[in-house]
Image (cartoon, rainbow, N blue to C red):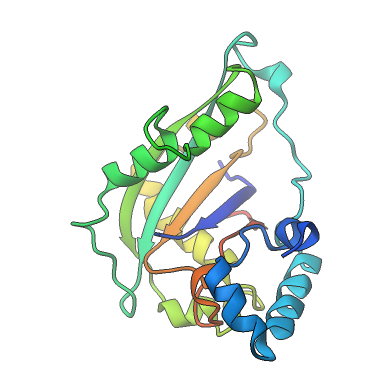
Length: 220
């Protein structure tokens, strides 16, 4: 069984239009530093180009809640895959699987909330986000290969689409992906890929992946 996968590349660790186009906005300190140079406009142009290529675009395959088994309490299962690289290894002791389970799926744990808290609050407690975190998995290519000095938005295969496909392939022996097809249409509805190291929205560097949402190809 194969799936088209919509994924969110997440990290450890502007005006409204820029927030919408960029997905995850620059850290305020990084933005202030970039605005003092000529780099800010270059960063803005690069992310606008990525948006044109499909990054942070609305999904064309929304979840059909009518096909879900329990309409009174919508429970959406989401998979999170942790990945690292030979040139960017994870600190699995400091950031174990349990850290991300709590960060993403816990309720009433953090002052600023989790994704699970967000959906509960904005759905009046009707939408419950649950899921599984697996990893860390070492990727077959280097971090620099996937980033390609372009925030991970470069041409396939040197981009985060290929990183996601490699993450899925690495996790495949351990995961039943059909468990994350919430509406039984043959497609995984949502997938988080968490990479080791900081994101470009924190560093401002083209040598880091910018956290974003994108659609990738089917994986055999």
